[in-house]
Image (cartoon, rainbow, N blue to C red; front, top):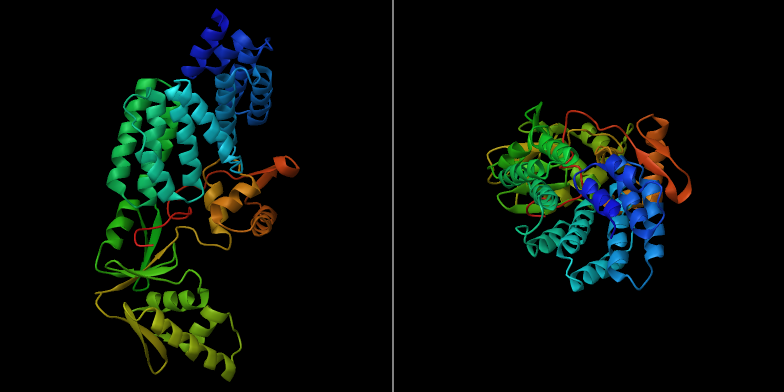
Amino acid sequence: MDSLIVAAARALAAGDPIGALNRVALRDDPPALALRGIAMAQLGDLDRAKALMRRAGRAFGPKEAMACARCIVAEVEIALASRDLGWPAKALDSARATLEAHGDQVNAAHARHLEIRRLLLIGRVDDAERLLAALDPTPLPPALRTVHELVVAGIAMRRLQSTAARAALTRAGNAARHAGIPALTAEVEAASRALTSPAARLIARGKERPLLLEQVEALLASDALVVDACRYVVRHAGTVASLATRPVLFALARALAEAWPGDVPRAVLLSCAFGAKFTDESHRARLRVEIGRLRAALRMLADVTATKQGFALVPRAAREIVVLARPLEEEHAAVLACLADGESWSSSALSLALGASQRTVQRALDSLAAAGKVQSFGRGPARRWVTPPIPGFATTLLLPAPLPGD
């Protein structure tokens, strides 16, 4: 390997893409193409970076297995940065195995971290945590240790473990400073802001207030009966009743919880559950049926009693009833929550992350675009959606991930 390639690689490792390009910008040999691709990725030109990495991979050929594997890992990282989550996981796994077989443990660990980050983005937190537990960060260089601790913090945030998240972010900050790469330090600082931004809203006794992540954690550990509008469950002291697939029942439960300790008139419940502006006997009969179903679903947690005006929710053991709501609530809040990280997403990646059909996601994006809340660039499969980060709240509770007890 010649001196220019070595110097360019060192510049990239130090977070200096311009310095790397100054050394290899006019070269078209495979190592130079790969380094140019990494440099363009660091500068934010992801489409050009992906094209360069593919050229490099083809130029290396099958006889240079380790170089090809590194190109695959770099291409996957570029895809992850552009939130294109549909890349073949088997190709990355094969590349990681090749790197391990050739003794390149650092790049093999990097490939594993990419796989874990993808699992985290699509809500497979258990799988991400299992793979992460098998990695020892001790021998990793500072930059990769930073990535490792950011993943640890991400899992802890989705588990609502604020103390563990804060400790991981502290370790990530120390590793980033040791690495001396400003972009890594900025990423750690951005992740840390999630702990100081509202993660949800508490609605109780007709009032509401924002909650930080640690306050949400404390609420779920308290003696309150929580109607959780972030995960569509009702929970108390480790007992969880999921209403995620029963939207009518959850709408009734939330309306009753927001009115506690008072009751809710039947006309209000009909409007909340069915959107009915004009009601007749059939609507009232259906309400009685749904109230019976809600009683059965919540039988371990609360009772639904009839009052003169309507119905009231009465906890069995809890001292109070509260509603935990998203910090931002609108028709397509989940889509906006994913886009709030400031990265560009494909509709297929959003579909994977949200567990919805791609057509449903596309309709939501079209609606948001018509309202001026998102914008797209590119055409066809290369089309990406982006929105400026929504200031003032964290997306932890909006992203797809199970809460304790789910």
